[in-house]
Length: 116
Image (cartoon, rainbow, N blue to C red; front, top):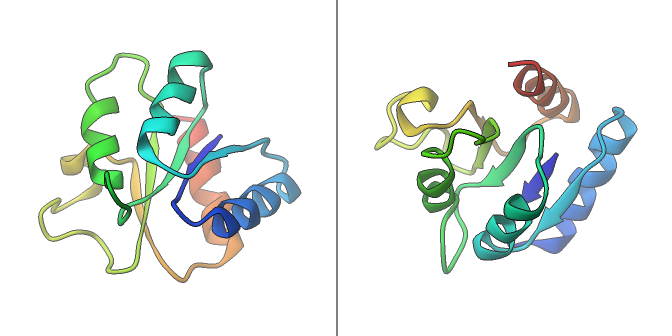
């Protein structure tokens, strides 16, 4: 499991939440670092913040969605499903998760994404 968010504290909290649910996780605080990590090791799924800078989670999704080995991506967003995406599948995401969310909501989505 790979978590991507520019807020390191958020990443660390999500790693802990997922670890408590039995998921081993790593994190990256920017898209470029995350892409480098994906080049080095496979991840069962990715949890990614949609709003980041300088590169957004949607840019990350654009890059990885064309790969045959692309893991399912759960996009975390402050604004719900982006209007430009329509549905998660249309944007290439497995699912969108609106902040704030319950740990159980995250772990249920992660479980579904890993078992796709």
